[in-house]
Image 1 (tube, rainbow, N blue to C red):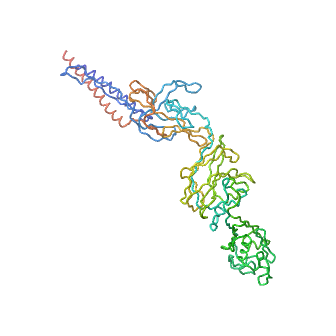
Image 2 (cartoon, rainbow, N blue to C red):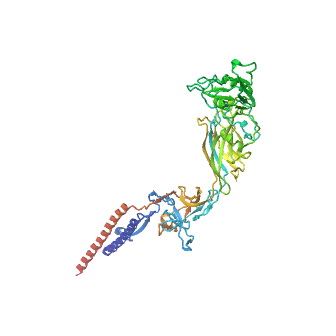
Image 3 (cartoon, helix red, strand yellow):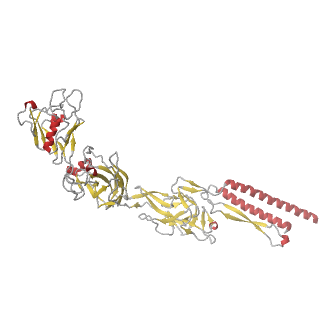
Amino acid sequence: MGLFGALTTSVAGLRAQSYALENISGNIANSQTTAFKRIDTSFLDLIPDTGNNNQLAGSVATASRETNTVQGDVQKAAVSTYMAISGDGFFVVQQPGGFTDGNPVFNGVNNYTRRGDFTLDKNGYLVNGAGYYLEGIPIDPTTGNVTGSNPQVLKFGSDFLPAQPTSTVTYHANLAQYPLTTKHDTSVPGSELLNVGDFTVNPSTVGTPPLPYMDNMGSGSSVNSALVTATKITGATTLSGAADTDSIAASFAVGDTITVNGVDITFTDASTALPPGADDGTHIPIDATVDQLLDKIDGLSGNSSLSSTVSNGAVQLHTGIANNLVVSSSNATAFAALGFSGTTTVNRLGGGPAGSGVVIGSDAATFISESIAGGATTGYDVSGSPVSIQFRWAKMDSSSLGAGHTDKWNLFYQVDPNATGGATAWQNVGTDFTFSANGQLTPAIASVTLNTPTISGITLNNITVNFGVSGLTSFADANGNAQVNDIHQDGFPAGSLQTVSIGDNGRVIGNYSNGRNIDLAQIVLATFNGSNFLKRIDGGAFEETDQSGSAVFGKGGTITGSALEGSNSDIADEFTKLIVTQQAYSANTKVITTANQMAQDLLNVLR
């Protein structure tokens, strides 16, 4: 080739370095472009066909070297619809061929990109910064499963998400082994139980026989005696007396009465002047002690002698098991000095009619005082109307009462918070929950069903209350309440789509006005056997080629929401290549200058 071959080779070298410079300039220009893939330059030597002893270095040609599989840095972004791919794969997108009435018209040709700066446009499409529309597979909001296998352009409207009626309530709680109800008294066995004898209608599960009658106690207020130094009354305090004596603060007088279950105990003269028979079961001297009065009250109520007593200045009246106890007095002032006002009624524990399974309105206040709150959740009917589902627990029996007794509870839900008279206020769910000594349900109860409950006038579908394998326990709890660990339901009202976001599992999540987050679509990634042979088009997108092969859907890397992939072009690296390219270009010009000088020397020989 000789001298003129050197000239043409140097020209090819200039052309190759110019090509490399163009790629470098493009890489630097796009160093901040989202998900840009730089193009490197490959130099190819061109060897002429010569003999083995005459081989030449040859000329040079250039080709682009793609970096489509080289990932840029992934960084978090504040926009919830931005996304980045970690690993292999491309988003499947389309670019509209035109617009009709402001709506895009697509030609059905898929393109591929890693540019994930997608945002919702006015029509509900996810469009990236280069104008490409995202594709994916829609998800059935009811089942949560995809509705096909081929990606399509995604569009999200503002349609309402239909209401879902409540069908399941998940409920986990611990019931205090000894519930601290309003009426409990640790000194009275069984006082923590719901006392069916206090109810007009027995709220136990339907057909449940009442417990045998048991003693109950009613306590008056703690009061002081007539002593000037404040001193609480005792069983030895007298029922009348002068100031500053151990007598009640207001004395009973001769002729006053205390009525016990309809029978009068009449006060007579002092015991020193009593006529025969004046101190029998229905008479008592005015200078008798409080203990002597309680002995007569116990006698009339059928209780054992001196069951009633005085504790810390408070008179405690016991019913016994024979009768309920109703006590009043003709002398209200003296009766108040004993710690009582008006008529005092104490019902025996147990007894009553068989279980009816409901609490009526007239018994609602009593029910609240003898049960503990069990938590609440908001349920929904088929139209999405909300209703508060309130639960309460009542302990019906206790193993502490001895043989034949177990720790048994009943669960109630509120039917009508404003119920009066015979209207149903609370409904028993109809199941006895029995706990063994270790605090576990025996037998285990996984769930109960509320059959079409009507609550506050709203009728719901059947509701299953799920307790799980060990969701209900009964361990000791100093607070004496029901510790609800989990209570939630599966219903919700209708709602409109407010925003969308991208989950890390590659799903488009719709955020609705009713607070629900529903999966709307699955973003599909496309992979290629020859990713570096894809054809570049504007906006960081690619087209299939014969050398790239067809797109394979459902494989690839993972999608990270609220993140963007940066350019894989490094400015420092490009500057280094720029220096090398400049030097190579200058060297090629030097070769041309030298070859030209040699040609001039040759021409001068001919002269």
